[in-house]
Image (cartoon, rainbow, N blue to C red):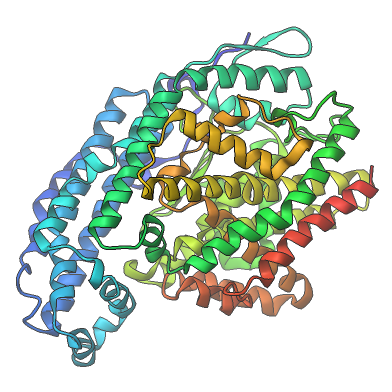
Length: 599
């Protein structure tokens, strides 16, 4: 039986080059100490923001510079720990960086408090007097909108200083999952034992054409999750309780209202995504599940079979290098400036694609202003991985263009929009693959891959969002969040969506334990929001060609200088209305209908 290797055993070229942030750990440690010392370059303005526009500008510029340096210190520690969370040194440095972040956040909390305390009209007057403040105007106005929910300066400072402590639930979840959990092996269809880990299951076995392996691995995976269910529920329940308490302290009507505020999203926009997609998509996805059951001749369609390949004998493998070339070709439509970013990602070790013990699961992109993006993925030589990689490259291209054209204060858009550029790349990859072949078998294979994108965002993440909505509603009613309650909620959501077409057993009900997104505010539903927008824009690109591409590039360059609604309107989509959501669900239905005709 093969084994899960340690970080020290992986090839260097399969890991990211963190020396681009700091050349040595000694350099990181020196900057760590320097940032601590240089907090005074900002705190020297405490109590002085009433002095005038020039003082305000000097303070905001000093804050921006310190924040940029803090970002580098934090990113270096975070990325090291993401690659190997078992390492005691990485754990220690990660904790040190988080402590520093909490200290700086506490020390600088006076800025928001003093700005909010200024008499009405003062900010407008400052901007008129000092034109260089205009770049901060949007962030200042968004801050002023939270005035009714701001606590006293002393209380805000205390809360900021507790950042490391208040962020503990997420870290406990990640540490348990990555450093403590071990899984029993599973037996494949040839009677051989294979190792199981979070990464191996989610990146490989879940899509295995071997039904025995797929189901046995899911059982082995779930058996270990079951042992941790009460700890994970208590951890998540603590996170939810923290958010509920804060929402009440700040005077919000609900925790959901508090979490939607920084996204610049109305409750109607939030509920539209969850309600419309669940209602419209369920019939299509049930049809998809029935198609898989028939084609694969399964005795029953279990939850573990949902991602099984429709054509097990036609599932081309793809190496990381081949995927890189394919993605570069597919994204060439976005022009040379974007293409240079994509090329650099694959030639300059921006991507960590090794598969080792202690590595964070899933995939993510961290873009560091002034440096470049870093992408984490565990490579499993399959096309689903290529789509995931294109997705993360979408984040990289977006945020690096934003960093190039926007100041730090305006470079990151609302979470509501953040998944549109990433999912757009998956759609462009699918279009590129379809354009290269007229083979019906290839076409149905690509459609299956494309449906994997919609499944991930319109089903997996969407139903996570529905679970969050129900959990927050219960928490506002002071209902305890327990393992029994979480399994009950997840089971009900899955059963409501899939109906009788899919067997939802006790193991399926444990899937709330698999994703870290529950600890990231209202993040899960935004995957569906982003894909809804990118589906509409991709159609405009197919219809209009270059004009639609040009608008899209302007959107990417705008970063966070506009609201998410305005960004999407610039691209040609009105997400304040339900129409794009209905159309996106109908498009998924059309893909499934075409797939049925090909089998």
